[in-house]
Length: 387
Image (cartoon, rainbow, N blue to C red):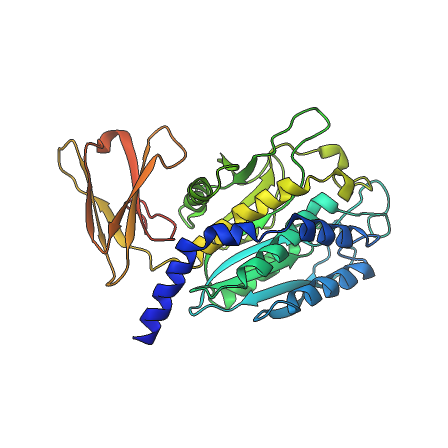
C-alpha cells in the first residue's frame, strides 16, 4: 500500500510541477559550467587535463544530494587517433529511483583541435561539447529535487572524438549487466542558435533518430517532440529521420547498436568552421538557447522517469468502420494514452487519455489514413505489431 501511494505521488509531481522544474533551469549556471570546462587548455582524451576535467565534473555531481558518482575507467584501444592502448576515464553519475529501469542523458567531455597536434593543441570545446556535458549536469541539479520512479544516469562521455570510445564502453557494460534502458538522450553541440552564414533559429532543436527493428529510437524521438510541444510554448523539436548528420556520428550510436532506444539533440544551424578548432569559445554561445534545450531535456526526462509499464500486444481491431479501435494487454492500476498521426506526418497529431483500460475507440478517425500507438502515461508509445 505504501509503495502504491509513493508511486502515485511521483506521477503527480511530474504532472503538476513541470513548470517549476523547467523554471529552475539556470542560464547563469550553464554559462559558468561551460566557461569552466573551456578554461582547460584541452580536454583531449589522451591528455592529462582530461582527467583533471573529469575530476572537476565528478566533484560537481558529488555536490548533488543523492547522486552516486563514478569515475569510470576503460581502455581506449589503439586506432588512428589513439597511438597505443590507453586507460582513460569518464564520469557516470546515477540518481537512483524506485525501479531499475533507467533513463540516460549525457554529452561528451572530451574536446579536439585538428589544426595542430591534437594532444597538445588548445581545444576549448565550448559548444562541442561542453554545452551537452553541462546541460546534463544542470538537468541533474534540477531533477534531483524530486523523487522519481525510474533511475536516472548522467554521463560525461570521453573518447567521442576518437571514435565514440567511452559510449561504446558504457553501452557494452550496460548490455553485460542487463541494464533496462528506456531512453538515451545524447546532447552534442547544443549551445548556439546561429551560424556565420546568417542562419538563426533560437526556438528549435534538431533530434536525430533511426528506425530499426531492434530498438524504438524513432518512437522515442517522436515522443520527445510531443512532450516538448505539451510543455514549452517558446520551443519546439525538429525531427530529423536519420541516425545522425551525413557522415557524422555521436555517443547515442553505440547504445542504438546495442539495442537501446537512443537519440541525439543538436542545434539547428551548426557552425562547422569553429568545430575542432581553438575558436570553439564560450563567447560564441547563446546561453538562453542552451537553457531552452536544457528545459526540453528536463521535460523529456521528467516524463520518462515516471512512466508506467508499457502495454503489451498492442493491436488494431480489424473491422470495417469509420472509427479506429486499439486493444492491448494492460496491467492493473496503469493508465494509458492513445496516439494517432496522419500517415504522412512524422509527429503525433493527437492523443487521448484511455485511463486504466485495455481497449479504446477513436471516434471518426479512419484507420486507413493514420498510424496509431498506445503508451502508459509518461512512456514511449508502442505501435501495433511491436515486439
